[in-house]
Amino acid sequence: MYTQEEKEAFMKEALKEAQKAKAIDEVPIGAVIVRNGEVISRGYNQREISNRAITHAEILAIDEANQAINNWRLEECALFVTVEPCVMCSGAIVLSRIPYVYYGASDYKGGTAGTLMNLLEEPRFNHQSHVEAGILKEECSELLSAFFRELRGKRKKNK
Image (cartoon, rainbow, N blue to C red; front, side):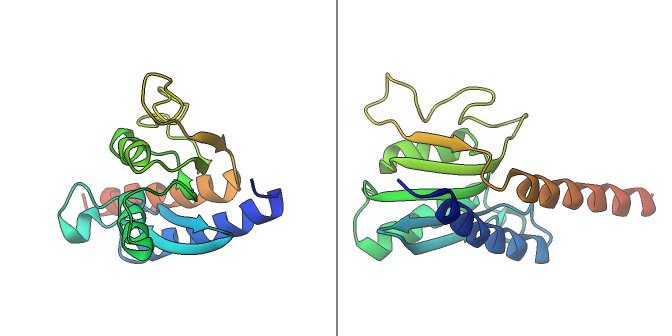
């Protein structure tokens, strides 16, 4: 659907969102939703600041995209997210009918877009998404690794 250059450009936009999360001490995950080659929504993790378990980057981007096009179906859209979606976000992706999902870093503890399981391509659901992993993988992985390194350092220092 998109060239490698376009995928990387959109993932860079998702990385900008992840930096917003990092700036407020949230796990740095960012997402953008693209329709007809243009970003129509953005989201970044806000669980700690909102005290709401559902405020993952993907959920916030999906909600904003629904409002932007005034439709719950995102059938002409692609989601770019810096880290593999979790079970909640994969469910929201399936239910909003996003046909293309591109992510950067795999999540070996909670990823449900190919790592632990693949809910997005599950044939028993009424909708499946094409999944492509590893877009700017190194940048996405390093942002996450550095965040947790710093967090562990802060916790160790405060003991």
